[in-house]
Length: 160
Length: 153
Image (cartoon, rainbow over all chains, first blue to last red):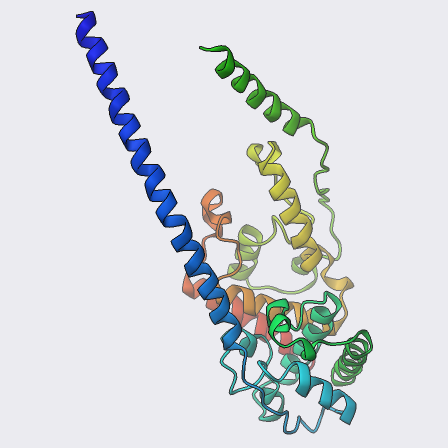
């Protein structure tokens, strides 16, 4: 009887060892594959942003000084317009919708407030994007100018 | 059990106990919130109950802490989520926001809820009431849009 138990344990031990070996092998194979897929996805994500267009005009209710327009064209319009391939960027903020009446007054105010908050947190332009286009970064003065512009416009629209 | 194994288990328990002792402060709960959205704005019953069950644990001062939220390492994550959530939007401080900020908040609610980013995926696992159907989400989005427009009439 003891012998049977001993044999069973030994066998079990052997099987576990074999399983462990298979697991190890799988991990060794899968890890580089996953890393590769992730890095490809990362690179692909950056490609998506490339779509520089120019801000044509904005809603008559919005005042847009030339310096603000050029900053937006440089750093924001790559993604935040109708033709953008960045679905997320387009959904969160689309400057073309300021112009064609697709944003209601409330929506315009909301989006302007979003610009202020996002710039305050330093979240835009995205780091990944800047890694590829370092010249599109916003300087501290530019950030401040856009943020103040958005604040004034939002308050004017809100009648405050 | 070999000496090494025993040592290993002792250190595991030791680390777990140390984790419990490590000081982190629980985000405070206030029950009296005179500036709360639901106390100041007329919100339809179906929406307010969804906000209560799916949002208020993190986006208000009325967080409810089930037992497991006070055990590290779960508590570290949850306390952080509540702090971040309240900072992004706190329904308990609704009337303290300017109209512009209210519009911004409602637009963000629209984005987050319609995209399925909120409530966080992990939340409905322990809070079944927070599971939102597509119709629920649409109802919240419509309500947010409507309230946003009504701010500037």
